[in-house]
Image (cartoon, rainbow, N blue to C red; front, side, top):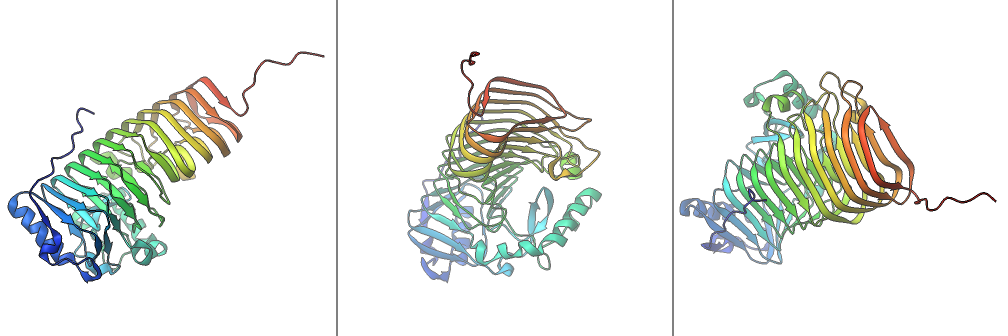
Length: 418
């Protein structure tokens, strides 16, 4: 916590409407935002205030150093569905592989001290736009992975037009000192908020309303010193998915994601806390505490890798967390999708304490190691799962320690013979 300090917000502010933006749901406000950002750059910092209204953005917002965007209550940014508005391609990453692709809708590259705050809404308009590309992405997806495995230079990995890789809604790439606070994030084309190779990040009081394919909430990747707190998740995919690169490239980059705190939040969506599956550079020092649920999650705690990844998942601490009905309560696997070979993941030192689940439709606790790399040193203390179909499924494990664990109805005094 001592290393996580939100950036200072400039008191030198300007209304974006001064540069021609109109919240009339008709006018293209991208030129106005570009002019306001130029003003911030010339001033070496500033705050762009967006008053109530619906602002159409025919293209991305590219943040600059020492800049804050404040979306006041009643303000809404709605992004264009036209792919050409997000060209030329920019340096980014897609499912754990560095490449050039369509610009994220809000994009910060190699900038410091940036904030997005307020009570307004950022609407990626994904349902009507990029999300429709999901069924067309496979060839480009496979090509990106082939380039990863073969070590093709990043400058030669040009995607964008003619390919169908959806951009993230918000991405911070190689940035320091980031704050996201108060806003509502909706209708993302792909991942909602991607922290890529960045550090010193605070995200608080954010609300999600994102139901398209792959609408993860927060995806920290190759990133460190992150506080995620007081969040209302409502995502069609993972709420928090900690990543660290994919396969060969992740192992080569070797920047672990670490020192991540998730606390005082409400989970709702596909999975609550996820680590992986793109985590080849390693994930460590993740702390989840004092969280509950506001709706259904398919899985509560989900750690996943496979033998294509390598790397490690270690020193994970989950404490005082509650879920309602789930499919699987706790699921740890080294064989995600049943595929991969040659690079087993080291999963160890997992501490789960004071967890409560009402019902698991499938399994209570699943741990799947690998024959040549067992999952080891997993400690469960004071864990209660009221009911489930399968209580325990442990394979290729070592030193799984259960203290005060009840799965199903707790057994009291034994009955006596009659």
